[in-house]
Length: 280
Ligand SMILES: C[S@@+](CC[C@H](N)C(=O)[O-])C[C@H]1O[C@@H](n2cnc3c(N)ncnc32)[C@H](O)[C@@H]1O
Image 1 (tube, rainbow, N blue to C red):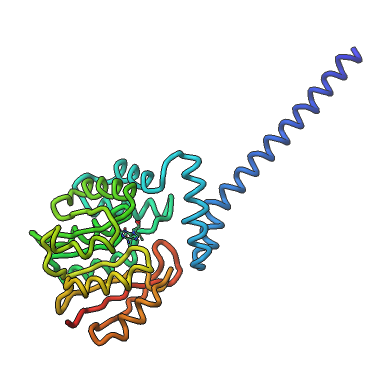
Image 2 (image 1 turned 135 degrees about the vertical axis):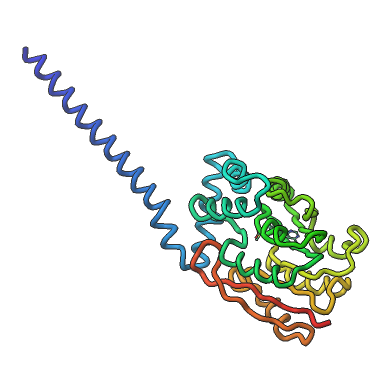
């Protein structure tokens, strides 16, 4: 009888320990979830370095490791699952939703994207060049607004990004408007006339690595790819920032330049676009 009471007491103690252990695990998991989903993203919204460190380094690496996939692959899966084939607007909306609610990504984003839209719409370019494709978000934004018969050439030197972008562009139904070329801008710009029969561009969107903005602009000038009236639109001129490019473009008598204030994609950190008209 005494033995039975003792084993009942032991069992009760064990149950209490398990309940305590499981509650501690559930509490810890809930706290981690709240930190990861709300508190940290909200806290880093206003600080450029923290936002980029959190979204572009920590979260991306952790999710890559957990899921065994890359961020562009996850973004593509979201497009294939939720966007309507042949509808560029639904591709754009799906990517923006993915980036606001699941994972930040370095697209120009919806806020600066609407400035990009107005510049493209106003210019109505028949030949356009994009430096830096990534997953094809801005490519789709630009190409959907081009008039019939126009072409957008977009350059991307990362083959894995280019592979995803091709599928995103195809999903949006814009293959006939876009030519995605794989390779570094510094090598491809001098070959534009020869390889693609381009004379000059009406519109150039600069959104590749920031230290290439200035050398590639000078290369476009040297190669005679700009005409009087060509519009250069440069993203991220504040965050991460392109001080040498801004210094050049704002002080050169060959350009008329204007800053459009906005925010770094999907955050509250200040960033903006610089629109510069080549005067010849
Ligand atoms: C900020 S992302 C482009 C985002 C894209 N424009 C959008 O808004 O959806 C920059 C991209 O430029 C590519 N890139 C950087 N330097 C480049 C270069 N010199 N030539 C070609 N691609 C480059 C990177 O691999 C990266 O995919």
